[in-house]
Image (cartoon, rainbow, N blue to C red; front, side, top):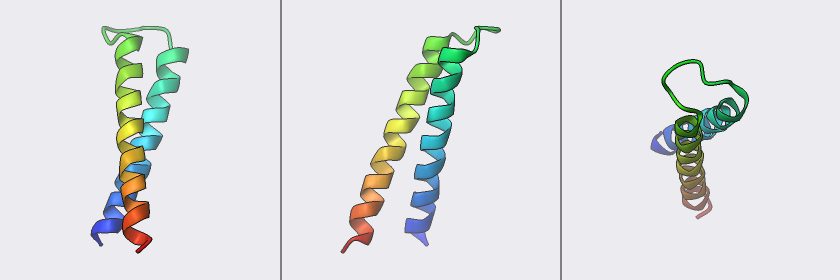
Length: 62
């Protein structure tokens, strides 16, 4: 059960991170959140999701 939750969180983090990366480059700054903040948070989410995914892969591989 814990590994399934980890896999879902990893996929969600990568998806949200990629979406924020695209939004940071495509969307014009409309409010007070600068595009560099969106890009930085998107990179962080994508990296964290990738780490969760790699950890999941090696735990299931046994």
